Every structure is written in C-alpha cells, then in structure tokens.
Image (cartoon, rainbow, N blue to C red; front, top):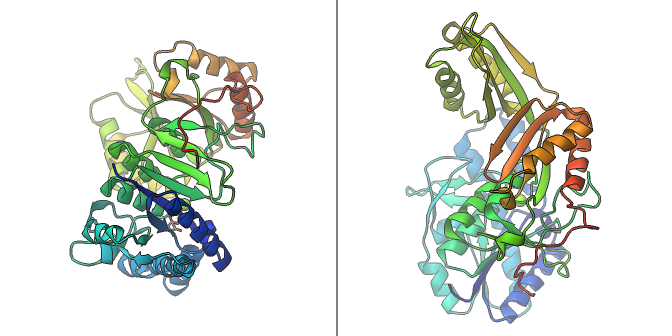
Length: 422
Ligand code: ASP
Ligand code: MG
C-alpha cells in the first residue's frame, strides 16, 4: 500500500465548468494532505444519455463498436477540462484516456470487463508529482479497439485503477450523501451508515440502493480495497466506508439495511412433469439469452399426476423475450400454463450480523404478518432475506421492517468505524 488515493467524480459532480472547478478544489485538497492523487471522472452531466439518444435517432440498432466509439468521447471532454482546472490553480496535472494508459478489457462492446491495467505510465507521472486525471468507463482491447464497461462503469474503472496501483483507498464522490439504512425518500428517518461490508453493499446494490456500480464493489472485495462513498457537494459529511468486515463484528446489529426492488416480475411455470432435465431446460434457455433469474422456487411434486410448479423472478424488461422463449420450448417442458405476476415487489433485509443469529427471519415474517401482508416467495443468502409481496404494500412493508429492526436515525446506535477524518 502506498500514499495514494484514487478519487472518482460522477457526471453530476462535473456537470458544468463551475462544478469542475469545485472538483479541482477537492483534488488539490487531497494532494495537500500529502497523498498522490489519481482522479477518475465520468462524462459531464447527462452527456452519455445525450450521445445515446443521438445514436438511436440515427439507427434503431446502432452497431455496438460505433456506440463505444461515440460514448467513450464523453469522458474525453471532462478529463481535459478537469486537468486544465487543476493546472489553473498552479498544480501539475495530466489527463489520460484508456488507450494512453492501457486499460485492457475483453473484446466485448458496451459491457466489457477489465482484464489488466498497465501501470508504467501512471507510475512515471506519479513519480514526477503529477495529479493524473483518468477517463472512466472506457477501455481498450489487446487489438486497440475502444470499449466501454457498461452504464455507470466509471466506479469500476476507479476501483480497478486503485487496486492496480495499490492505493490506500478509493473515494467515490457522488450526488448522494452516502449509503443509508434504506431509501430516505420512502422512510424519512433512514440513518446514514458509517461502515458497510462489501457483502452487504453488494446485496443493497442489487436490491435497489443504486449508489454504486455493483461490479465496482465486487472488484473492491476481490482486492480488499477500502471504498468510501461521499457527497461531492457536502464535504462536512464524511460518507460511508465499505470494507471487508466490521472492526467489532460481535456487537454490530443483525440487520444493516432494508431495501425494496420494484423491477421484477414473477413467472410461474405450472404443471411441468416432475422429471430430470425440466429445470435445466428452462434455466439454460434463459441463461443463453442473458436473462438473469433471481429467487427460484419449485413446489413439491403433486403425486396424483406427478407434476411440479416452478416459480422464479426476472427483470420486467426481460419479460417479452422470456415469453417468446417459453413458446419455443413448451413442446419440451410441457407446461400446462405460464402465469405472470407483474404487480410484485421484492422487500429485503440485509446484514452481515444475521449470520448465526436466530430469530431474524422470524421477526421479518412476523412484521409482515402483523400488517396482513402475504408473502409470495422467500429467498435467502448468508446476508440477506428477501420476500416477494404485492407491489402496493411494498413501501408499508419497508417502513415496518425498518422500524422492527431499529434502524431509524432516532434509535440507531451507529456502527462506528475508522472513517478517514478528512
Ligand atoms: N458516463 C457513463 C454513464 O453515464 C459512465 C458513468 O457515469 O459511470 O453511464
Ligand atoms: Mg454513477
């Protein structure tokens, strides 16, 4: 580990030239603390959306290579402007794109994964005392083709660079104040969390707390890179620290956060034969089309006719494609009917502290029962319990669970962690 901090600023933080000057101040502030600084930035404001819209105006299905050529230009603008803003304050800065650095990705367009990051040029500039301003979101293949990492991918660029350079921390500056116990728009007394573990954050991100690109948290976990989320507009608020585990696991509360996800639809494949290969056929067909499946339940076989029901959830946006696929495979899986339920929500409680602590699930079910809410499906992982409920009662469920697990800012005993004191 070296005296190096990687900072990342998202689109809203660099939306106009005044905001870019403001970002330059935060960068210089870190430099003055004696740290080397690499800054990763996104495109200004809604630039990426705007570029995308132009592409769609020209062609309904633009080629993904050209899309990457186009979308990657957004970050090119913000790195040059930020570098100028830092230089204008008398500090040495240099902007670099993915091609210049060698941020090598797979040969896949619009959602490439990073394979390797060359560090020689970065290290050379750092040793000369320069602040390096890096274009997020973009990469380059071994053959020199420009790629992008998927929408929101600059977070992942920042964490990958921090890991490659062995930074002491990666700070993600954003337009929210950090990660809360739940969505403060639904539950006004949500509390800000000081410390969250990678596993909790991954679950909170995938159930709708849209603060970070999930791949950035996976990368941080893989390299054990401490990740801080903080507001670029309110530096008084020191944000959250996301790391491997709590300093004092034993005293932390069982549940860290609750979340609701309205983006799912439930599909029940009714009365399929209870025999080997049926589930495999259904789920490989969906997987081949990149449709990801969540919560899965298979009922007990009905003995009189030897059939099963298989229920699962997918993203609403994948429903039309999934229905086409079912039409194609129904000769093989012989379902009696396919039932769709799109008026559902997934309510989840998340917490590393629920491991080995009995009664957490019971409290969740009890809370829902007291509201007379019917649970349609249940799924669990080590750090999460999710219940599928009717969409119209989901927010009531969220509020009640937040209260039942004492997460409100009026009651919470904050988990104190070693948040950097700057
Ligand atoms: N500019 C890209 C986007 O809007 C990447 C990012 O912001 O992280 O998706
Ligand atoms: Mg973002």
